[in-house]
Every structure is written in structure tokens, then in C-alpha cells.
Length: 568
Image (tube, rainbow, N blue to C red; front, side, top):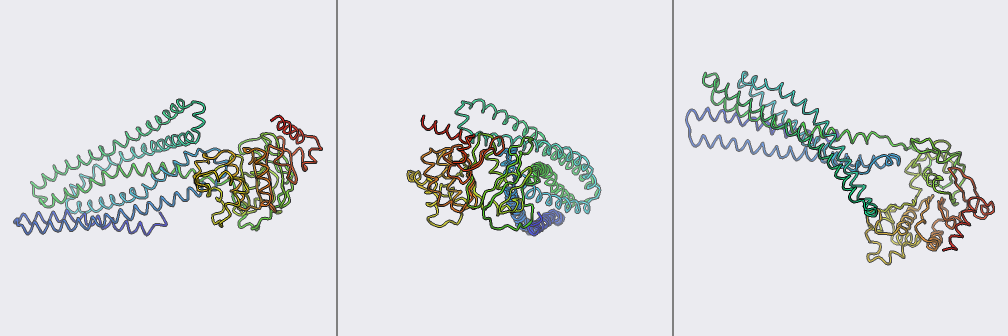
């Protein structure tokens, strides 16, 4: 709320004037009735009616601006919260996303933030409004009749007890509702993403049962909340009704005894009626605040998570990367595990050279690439780029000069053109064709009716596996990085297409440091040096010819693949 002090101040001022005009109306009734008791005339009725209309008009104008200003401020706060929340998600480490469900994060970004907005908008606005209404009305009520006002206030302890009880339960059940809603969202998101798998294994009915179970839990949590909420208005209305009955009884006796005038009693009854809104609004405000409080707790849980990876040295000295990479006795194990995925890795990759990495599944190839852009931190040892530890290089500098092409290519639901030029927002005409031709995707695009304007479905579902990989390669090339990390990015294309692509991109790779992971030896044999990873350790290293002479795992894999090719 702090940045919007001015907006709230204007809004609160409008609330003050709204209530000032509202509190004047019963006084006009009082004086009008007393005057009419002296003699009823058309001019008197017109006069007092006109005053009431004018007062109502001004009160309505200020109420309009009260709502417009404060609700507008709450929308800006909602906007700011979403921006901050999304920005925070952008800097959290991959390990966070390994543990967290996407649907749950989406719920916090949508319905939870909306519930918090209701607190900063309507709840704040009506809290101030009801407090001022009660304060103004009670002040005049005391002036009109102290005994009657004290009688009304005897109901306050009952009201306070009810508020405490209801608030406690609304908070508890609101938190349960949001948690169940997150579970439901997470299931729907996963089901829709994996709908083809579900259908392939004929699991529609079990998935329906799972959805029914989660939906039922969400329904039951909501019903518990509804039962509490349903008590709010009847209880407060009943208390208000009791208060009005007491006023009528005691006020009527006071009029008979002559201790209060008819005008005072009518005005007093009007002020009691004005208190009906604060009494009724307490329940509504209470509900909004407790739901918002539960949602805020869920948002804060995420916002309080510190990024595991951040700039460790403020304003790191290295601002321009050349591309020398060195691993010094690097060991790594994933968080919450005791098994070393990589063990005592020593590597020296000169700038502009290429390193091929081969090994069986689970040998640590992808993990090794992930350590260079600091997607994970090394457990021990050091990784240096241009003789500077990666921890001392600003993340924006480090990652801007790196591009990764993963085996599991991710494309956005957007035009193919925007996917290729994702990293190059201000591209020049001709860049698109250059990168697409080099990656080999251009020939496929020529067959598309809309060319590069074709809409790529969610996660690139409208493209084949090979097309997605080549699009991802074009995207990486468009970033023009100093260091290019290729993680088995030719696994979905045939050897002929792979050879063409490698030949096409060779000119674009000159002067760049390349690390390429592959299962096919044909993908690696052009590399300046090749390492064989086995159970997290480097067991062989050298160029293609040298490794064949060693007659180790590399040579064994090479001859096996040759035999497979001949059999095909």
C-alpha cells in the first residue's frame, strides 16, 4: 500500500465527505418533523425534500469517487503483486520446480492474488467506511439520547464474541479451500499436458475418478466455509433486529414520558438504521480479510523462498566472455541426495574449440552441461570461464553469452518465427532465414501453408520431434552466443539430416566454444576433443582417432553403431 499513499488518502477523504453528508440527512428529518409539527405546508415539504435530495446527490458523487479511486488502487496493487510474483518465479532455481507443481503456482498467481486484492480494495474501503459511519452515527446518537445509545451498545460484547469465533474458522477453512483448489488446478494442468499419454493407455476413466476425488475434496472444503459464511448475515441481522426492538420500546416510552421529542426519535431511529450497514458489512469484510489472509500466506511462502543460485559477488568484474572453460576437480550431487553424479571432473576447453561428450544413460552428461550456466551449483571444485570462477560472473552476463539446446525441446505457443528469434528481439531482416536454413528447418517450413507465421501449438505439439529440435537449434544460433551447449539435440533426426545440419552450421560456429552431448558417434567425431563419461567419471579422452586406437568404451560404441547401420 505504501507506494499508493496518495491514492488511498484521496479515497479516504471521499469516504469522510460521503459519511458527513449521510450523517446530516437524519438531522434534516429531525428539524423537518419539528417544523411540520408547527404546521404542514407544501412549501415546507418541498424545502426539506429538496435538501434531502441535494445531500443524497453530493453523498452519491463522493461515494462514486470513493469506489473509483480505492478500487483502482487495489487493481494497481494486484498488478504489482503479479509482476513481482512472476519475476520471483523467474529467478528460482530448477530444483524448486522439481518439487513444486505448476498448477499450484498458477493458482497463487491468479485466485490467491485476486483474494488479496479484495482486501486492499473493497475490504479496506468498507472497513474505513463502516468505522466512520459508526463513529459519526454514535456521536450524534449520544448527543440525542445517552440512555438509548448505551442500550444499543450492550449488544457489542455479543457481536465481538461472534466476530472472534467466525474469523478464526473462516481463516482455517479459507486456507483449506485454496489448498484444495491448488491440487485441483495442478491435476488439470498435468492431465491436459499429458492428455495424449492418458488416451494412449486408455486411462480416461481412472483419470476421471482422480478428478472426481479432488473435486469432491474441494467441494467439501468449500461447503465447510459456506456453512460459516452462511451464519454471518443472519446472526448480524438478528442482533440488529434485537437492537431496533429495544429502541422502539425504550424510545416509545421516552416519547410518552416527554423526555424525547418525536423529531429526535425519528432522527435517532434513522441513525440506528445507518448502523445496520456497518453491522452487516462486518461479516462481509471479515470474510474478505480472512480469505485474503489465507491467500497472502500462500503467496508469501513462495516469495520468501530465496533463489539457491544468485550473484555472489556484487558487480562482478567480467563483463565480456571469450569462451575458455575449465573444470577443476568438480564433484556434484543433486540436492537432497548423497550420490555423486559427477566425480572429480578435470577439463580444459579452449575458446573456439569443441568438446564431444559421450556415455551411457545416467553417466552425468546433461548434468555436466547444466553446471556451466549455473543451473545447479557444484558440490566441490571449481568451474572457471576465462579464468574467472562462474560464481563471480554476473548471471545476466554468463547466461547471455550461453545458449542451450536441450534434448527435450520446448517451444512456446506462438508463431514459428517468434520461437526461432526468441533470443533476438530486435532482429534484422534476413536473420530468420539465415538461422532457419543453417538448422535445416527451412526446408520443412516451405511445406507449411503459412510459412514462418504458422502457429506452433503448446510445447510445439504441431511439429515433429526432429522439427522441434532443429527449431531449438535455430533459436540457439539466433542468440549468437560465445558458448553453445548441445544436449543430444540430433537424437530425433536421421544421420543424413544430422550430417547436413552439422555441415550447414559449421560456418556459424567458428570462434564459438561448443560442448555437444550425443549418443551417436557420428555426431561427435568432428569435435576437437571427446570425453567418455562412465558413472560420473571421465574414463577416456582424446580426439576421434585417438579414442579408436585406445579400443575402450568409445571404440566399442563406435563399432556397435557401425554394425547397426550396416544391418539397417
